[in-house]
Image 1 (cartoon, one colour):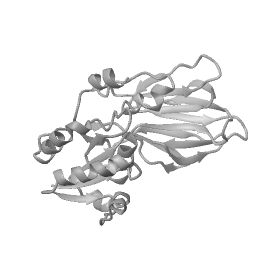
Image 2 (spheres, one colour):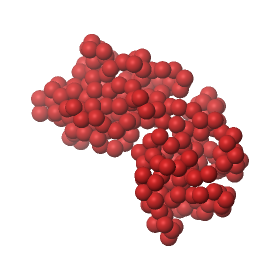
Image 3 (tube, helix red, strand yellow):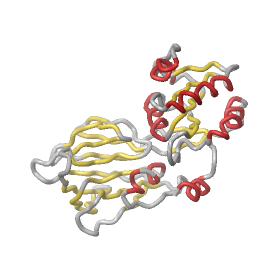
Image 4 (tube, helix red, strand yellow):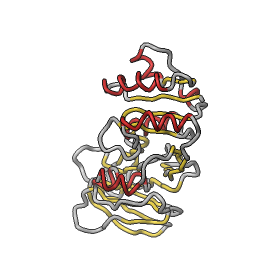
Length: 266
């Protein structure tokens, strides 16, 4: 089996655990992501080579998984959690041996997770596994944003911004901003204002086939569009960031049960 290996290169415990994983996968063809390979003094591979792997194993936290998704968006991922909460990287370190054994013997089912795709000024943005955030381009300054769903204005928000999250992302930034936890089986997106200056609007759950538009309306106050933690575009007043369901879902090896994770981690 050809397995891509990605770990957080700045976490000493991740580098140490990588050595353990390499021993467990000694009979497989292992492809090391370049940043990790440099830390280990080994040969690394390009993102294009990682995309040819049968599986990606990540060692770190959910941020490492998001990085892996950008490197190889169509390759199924198994995440070993050495970070904090770990909703995406959900294999505990003491479960790694059993999970890897099940992986290489073909006993782990693959599940798909919805992603979000955006567009600004005719330019398509990278797909988001967790969320897309429209926030002020000037630190400490609020925005006034018009939110539309399927061409109908649903809210005008004055505050720090707006999050559009997938069910996967509902347990991340959107949850911290007051949004609901979404069962991954629910085919919806959630739109969550960030620190609005008045009590309304509340978070909004919309069907997954909705077309969501967010437009900054205050003159001279532009915005950034941030996709899974990475700045993807600049948005001028009067321009619209448009979001809809991606036709390329993420793929993960199934491990753990959603409501068990909710009880343990939230």
